[in-house]
Image (cartoon, rainbow over all chains, first blue to last red; front, side, top):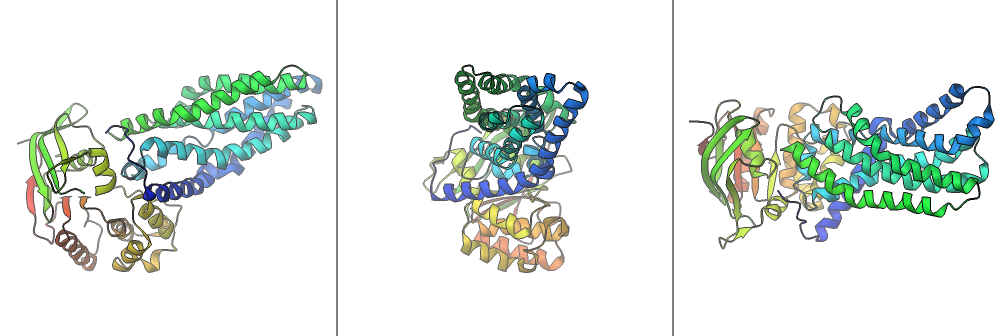
Length: 233
Length: 206
């Protein structure tokens, strides 16, 4: 089966809307949903000052970067189930028989995952960052970087989730596959926030972050669909 | 729309193991074929190959329209066939109604055909229940409802009768007969005889 798109017709839009609704409902409930991911995020951020010791100034200096790294880890949490449930219960078979190609299905799944998990995490990001000692005036750049970075984390993470389909201990494998690919958004996301805080030129870093995330959103669906087809055959 | 399914000189393998080779048959509108063979002979794999999920080792599968012109396989599969396997694709945390509505829209059905499917398969009392609370037979009826809710000519069925009770087996027999009378095609992997006139196709290495 090649990935050639069936021509989109009226039924294509109905199917797309139905898929989006289903994926949002599933993403909302997956792995405990956004509340669980946010609790993990806050918990992780709470451990940092405990590990760092009784010098809040030291922590405040690295707060934006530390908060962004914690965000990356929290984004991984519910990715394991992105394709796995559909693969195990046969839904992925049926999704290949619909009017839209698997590439679109994969893109919609990631978009729903981002809306249901990435956006709530991004909303928590400024709070976590301030709690770690970052200056409150950084909240907006923090939020923007977390929203953009989260989009990249979700789509790149989706490639990992599709690649490990059918493997045992898939969750651990995803982390190993995907964490190296999380390096650029962490560098640019945390870099943009740090630069803004220090009064330096912050726009290039933010532009790189957005470019990375949009490229991931554009290209990752092809990789995810190929990995899914491979797992099904 | 699909008028004829043709399988030519097909060979399938799972890993290193050859399931069968040199299999050929064709199915035209109004015809049903029952795939028989021992466990592991490759009946399910053949259905998955027809659905485009498995890549054949050799041979080809193609779909022709009324004029004998070959339809692009992706288009034929995304508009013209249903696959009903062991795994029904139903999510345990969602309600029967939500799942049936989603699959109907995904597979190209509309509200009228959905209502007809609910009526035919007597699903009304189940629609508000979570999938995890359904019995195996109820889940199968919900999966069968897709066939009615989104009309498509070629049905690929894998042991469709297994979890159904006697009266529902008779009902599903009628549904299959109606589908054939309306110009549909059925390719079913079975162990027990189907309650409709079928051609038998033996699958497996000779």
